[in-house]
Image (tube, rainbow, N blue to C red; front, side, top):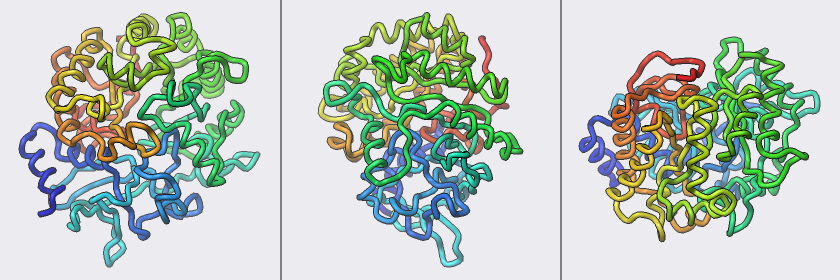
Length: 443
């Protein structure tokens, strides 16, 4: 038995209440996966939906370091099923790491599988190329560039501002590679629009709506870098909000509208609501005060941690607590040289933050930290946080939700192992299965 296999099986035995699917998913998200040439896509001319690099790289190497995976993109996501662990259907966002002990490869019959320490542990499914990706806008741009879909087609991800105005070592979040990702795609000659035109967004959505006949796309997220001054003459609330206004006027009620932006003053948050946004994600990033100040220097300088949290709570007056869903980056709590040195300390800190928000009816969610190598924390911590941290976080997250009588947040598809589609962490895989609540409410 290989070392990683032994670690994974030990954690599954120690934490039997955490779905075994989530253990593998968190390990793949934190450490990445390698792809044989047989498992790569043929980009936009093939039969497999390719990775769109929708905001961050989510890779463990730069494009030049990925080899053939930089020329023939891996799939956007993979689905794991079966194998010796009898895995239920599990959707995992692809994070490429050529040196990972996990590898996706085809067998002699051409069937894709996931291999760990050389042993096949699951069958692998890849997303088919959606019909709407086969059509281009009138200006020749691809739908994948303008309005890519993730979470197995559930979410349209509209990164309408591809860079962040928190710039440089004294302002950029220390785990975030949004600015580098922009630079590497431009350097590689790939189309990667900096500020997306509203009419382009609407045209891409028209194509998606026309060809998504099964209505698999259920929500859209408007997001991008922080705006500290203005973009195209608009402040942050108006910049992101005017896209929502245009979408809701053209496609009233077609999708659940979400926006990821800074924690803004209440009047600005009200503008989001007035523009038609239904769910607000003012991400709090990391709970611990010292780590927030160190890892989010721009946010600390322009807003400050305490004010950031006050604004999150205030936004519940506008959207309803259930529809305020701040994200945090799970794992940076343990990043050297400043993070917690034990899993116990890190879990205690993160749980304190969960209890702070959940006691107010606000349900955070999280993205599993991928240590991208061009970021300060990624360079210092290429292995990321220990897998045990991520497994214990899933346990603490569900327990805290139960303590406050909360259920899975709206706009994320169905919860439960074998049903969840949220692909960048396992929090939805680890919650009880129930019928999807669909559109958000103000409860």
